[in-house]
Image 1 (spheres, rainbow, N blue to C red):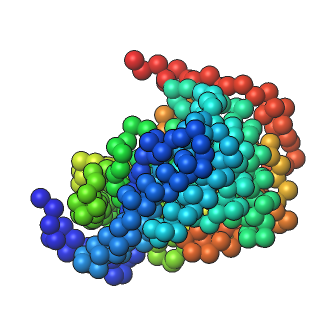
Image 2 (cartoon, rainbow, N blue to C red):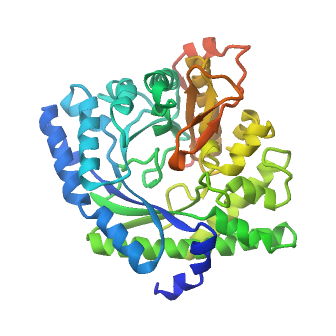
Length: 451
């Protein structure tokens, strides 16, 4: 039985080591909001979100005050909006405005789900929504978008990959006056999960309940502090990480269970992801360096990250029956103080970062590219990352931001949890354009035949 004793030993983690509940995310199904009239559908969307999530922020603040556990974000994920567009037709940006109006009313930080799932092809509403993403992100503040372009079962939709390179480029251009913030709220997935509470990639899967609460826990600073006391071998390092992850996950389950009870909805999952922030002492890169690397990005980084990711998952599964989402270690460059430093010094290059994504929880996250990077290169980066996910039966993603008008060595400053991104050099001397222009679908690998 979970009780206050489960969090008493974490008091020091909260006060000194940056332990927090990164997000309480309410997932809401909007399937019953579909309507042949887009304006009626948008009104139904607004009304249902306000009805279900009206007390979400208040509940999070009450739990935070009662238990002394910081809850940084209160968020909402919704059914992929392309499914509503398939019924209503019309301009998908209208849905983005309805979501923004709902976010303003209930006071959440973000709403995710301006999304489409196109791994095997385009259904009605998918292309229209994808093409509307740049305008939607330009005209709203709190809306996040995602597109799933591949999976181990389906292969990779290369027509969608090409389209997403163009969409990311257009989104950066439309928001160039705001440090290209548009694509910072857009994730391109392979093997997207349906219960992810973390933005910008959260959406409410069609197999999820009508309304559910998920919790995302974070604690890189806690793991880093624990490893500072360890002089043992790598087996002991892994054991310490596992035990620390266990304690962190128990806090998440306590908060998630309590939030679900007070809101009168089912409790979904705890996502134990070591999600860093730009604050000193809250970095995944510094954990890898504490293991013995001189700097994140040197040889050995991929092995260290693989061990960290695995130990985090093992500790979380022991602590909670409902671990889900992405659960592991995130490596978003602009959101991690250690990653920022390594990228600025040149020790962490995009090629090494890509190798690291084969063993982390997600992929190339919050990577800032030179402003001159053409759409086909962005598409090729997406294709490479999707291939890693497809072949390895894991979730991978790309959140890339072309820094319009800037070059490698400069940077963008997004502020808050999004941090600041040093512009990473990419290979622009040889073009993948002919490969990307071929389109079609990369077939599913042998790993897909598991029946």
